[in-house]
Amino acid sequence: MKIVYSLSGEGRGHGSLALAVLPALQRAGHQLMVVTYGQSLDRLAGYDVLPIRGIKHFYDRGGRLSLPISVFRNAGVLAYYCTSWPTVRRQLRKFAPDLFIVNFEPFTPLIARSLNVPVISFDNQHALLCLKEGVPPGQRFPAWTTKSAIRLVAPWARHYLITTIAAVAPARRNTHIVPLVVNGQVRQIQPTNGTKVLVYLKHPNARFLETLKQTDEQFVVYGYDTAAIDRNLTFRAFNSQMPAELGASKAVMGTAGLSLISEALWLKKPFFAIPLKNEFEQMVSAMAVRRLGFGDFAEEPSPEQIKQFFANLAPYRESLRNFHFDPDAAANKLIELVASVASENGR
Image 1: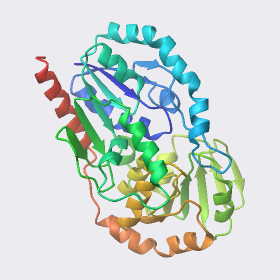
Image 2: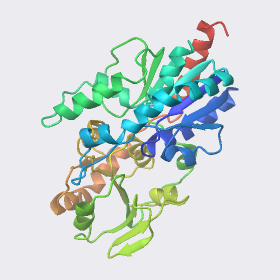
Image 3: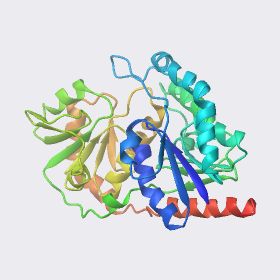
């Protein structure tokens, strides 16, 4: 089949998921066109990529995801959707796709619908629509805004394939829950327990870094795209050695994106999550890390909380030792669903 795989370019997680499943789709004999923007562009440069503009998150001075600022700053993207619709639609129609696989990217499902081409939604965000646990205090507005946005992405998809660490109960027959996903590069790493803690921050967090300076640990910090040393913090620009440093780390701390959490858990690394404020998706993942005994979280970690995290590394590692998942399950299920759609369409 000819498949358009579209994905968000906000953050690095969507690109990591694509790198894990696109090779499997190719091995299954499918021809791919990738549609994306932002941080995913460079990571997927080896594929046939159609660049577009896409929605991004914007934060206030306190590091909190801001709905007003995000709406204002993304106004140009909505205008782009309108003005570029004929051009992008023509390019996709020329590819003659049999199926769209959409990873939380809202523009191409609209084009797929106009072309009468079926859609499979594949992401972790849709898990938030079928959570077993209630919304914690203080998270009701972020939960409402997040769920409202999710409902706008591919609401008519033929199937919803969801990766999650949270406790969920599928609400519809066409919803399929699969384990976490890690790409081949991470899966080849033989983890060791080193002396340094890997830190990844999607958004600058000066207060957290100042707190880390009050500890006796050594930290390698990614996310600032710079190379520098500040006391016990060694800053790294993104490079090909980041997975290896992850595998050799003592523990992992950082933004609570599911991709980083998945890689840390696969490598049996205790995780301290700092969910971005107002990002309900990250809060849910952070709470799951604590509930499962793999680590802890705080939006604004105190020195005492960080000290307690390092004091509890042994029980976290014991919990991780007994945690297993099949990183191929999502790709295998996706290929199964693609075959199902092809059969339904007589291909």
